[in-house]
Length: 178
Image 1 (cartoon, helix red, strand yellow):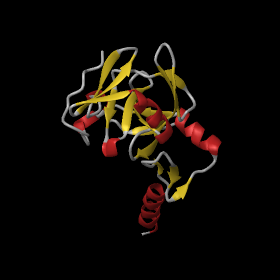
Image 2 (image 1 turned 30 degrees about the vertical axis):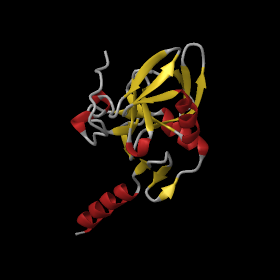
Image 3 (image 1 turned 135 degrees about the vertical axis):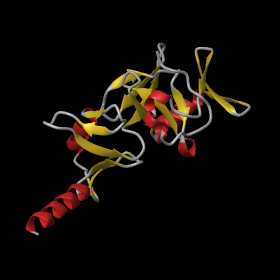
Image 4 (image 1 turned 180 degrees about the vertical axis):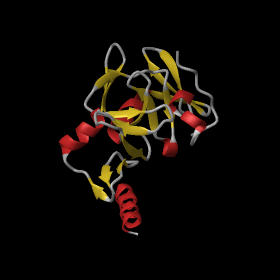
């Protein structure tokens, strides 16, 4: 009986202590917000994804699985340059936005592929408004215009970012990344 009680308590505590990233980019452990900036940065810098599409924090003896409600990374800043758009992510890394892998998701949120196309990222409000200055609508489709060239914005994420076909955000098919 004691062993069963302990196993039950252990499972319950494991569930209550689940680390999650909510749909607004806030970290939680169970129901408690994680507000220590350095802890959040450490988490962002150690996010990984397994073949089944589950997110975890790497660096421990075994993976620490996390629940990601929307996307593991957020774009916090956009800077238009001669080469393209430099984006700053929540892990403080900076990379060049891949203009071929943009899509519109729930509530007209703008997403893109980051970390060499391995992860989805969502634009926070200010960067979203900054980049939409260069958007054009033609009929029902949207395009990002950069240096005179139109880059279509898809209505669903690339399939490689959506393992198992879960939660498709639209009907349009994305190009396969090479």
